[in-house]
Length: 261
Image 1 (cartoon, rainbow, N blue to C red):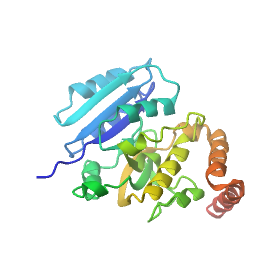
Image 2: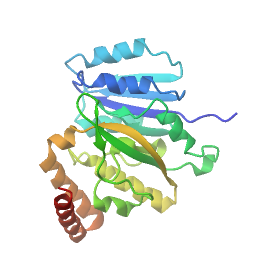
Image 3: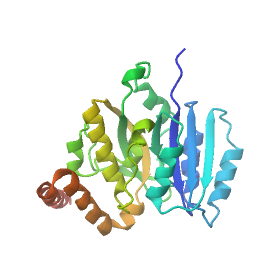
Image 4: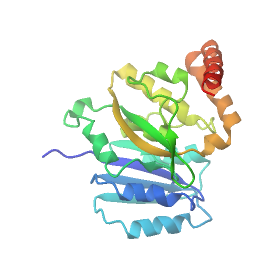
């Protein structure tokens, strides 16, 4: 009988009392037995930690290991770097407050796509689709940016084609590439590109699950700081693809936005 991989779901929180419960419940409801839920809190001053304590008390899955870290950090991406270093799972994904796993068998279906018995060939990255939900957790629409059938580093020249919360990374590889704290709003975009480039260099597999993996809260940090996020994205794109390619891509974004109105 093969041993199933441990999956780390990392949730970074700070004063998230209004939206956290649906995230915790979506992990709690997972039928997959080997989950580590790593909650990294930046010393919330509201009732966030009370919600977390109730979640721990009602945890009925003995193989769901809930770990909590509560300490000051230097922002979202600093806390996410802490989670990468603490994670014990074979793979890590970030599911932040307000987001949720799409269904009760999401992780189970994802692991089935791994072909896990081939231990020397385990994929570097596993990805899938995303639905957008509102502040009450109600479905809004499918994510507009289309997930590529075959993901390459060039895919992200067209923007963040895969939602960060639907991007699972082998933890040993994730540790090689911490989030760049020079970026306040789009470090996840840079992180994904660097990981994909690494996988290409090492010829590691990148697997498209063809599953809806995440229900994503549309009003996140990037959305609230849209202009500053776009400027950061341009810097990142210029760094990875060159300034001319970044300019041409953003001109295409403008045209694409007009056409879709």
